[in-house]
Length: 404
Ligand code: SF4
Ligand code: SF4
Image 1 (cartoon, rainbow, N blue to C red):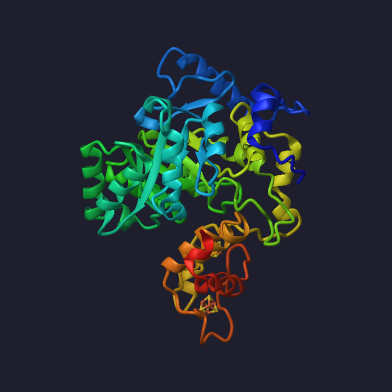
Image 2: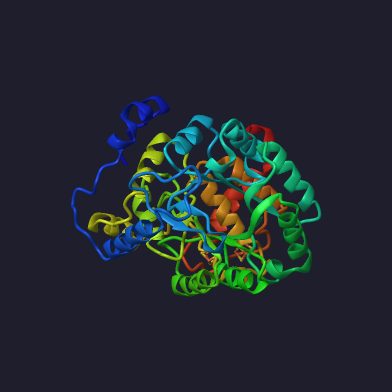
């Protein structure tokens, strides 16, 4: 992939108009119909509810379920962003929704976002953060607000759920409702990386959640099931936000074969039940590319072809589906999907700190596969699970200070 290594100065000099180009092929596929629908909806709402900070010309907007909040189809995941200038540039360019989490960069991420937001009108942006379930949940919400310098977040997610029981657990429902009632979050939701269809349906059943943040991308095997659950949730007024749209960003561990991330983002947002997506951005080039997508979701034939590279070249990729098929196959019931996610953070995102944090949180022994002469796991994506697991588990022995 050719990189132009754009920095903030270049980004501002070129200006948005210069950055946004129309597809050279001009070939409109089935998604052209969706673009027309989006444009029609936009026209219908141009005088209705406005997005935070107002509309930008050419941007495609959708409404976040019953919250009524209007957002551009592309937002910013800041998990890997430690450059405040990049976040400022995104907000200045018209992206309004930032998605962080209590645990990102051990809290430094929320502090960086807090610095960026300082002095900006509160109604010009839309902030989500995420906190994991647990005894100190309410205390952690307060710490997040303190770091962000905000009295409230727009969405608070109960982070990383994969089971119906956790979504519906009485204690979780109680604290989430309490946070909303106290005004510390305008809207509440759950986030899910695996078993997403079950989590989405449970969120629907719970009747208290406004939003679900779900993994969603062109590599999902169970896409029909997930699409069906999303359609049910959307019909009931739950707002849906997509993450992991880039499916790991690379096809290989060595990062020699990049995924066409622009195509991947367009592909995800073809689903009209999604309001927005939170692709992670760490460079101005990525911001530039995503600002093109926010104006034009049509996929060119070349982009569609690129998305099939995994199939055509038999590449397993770095993205774990989170299907959990492997867990019962492993006699030790190891948390394989979590370990595979850490593997993707390390090799796909080059975010060793996030990978280290995730691996350490699982409290596995130094050799989790000890005693297994051969691996009985048959991964849906043909990952060499044992190999990846041993590889990523090595990170645990590195002290956290090495990752800043
Ligand atoms: S080698 Fe590891 S992952 Fe594979 S079955 Fe044994 S313990 Fe589970
Ligand atoms: S490692 Fe393979 S089988 Fe296990 S959850 Fe991921 S994709 Fe599914």
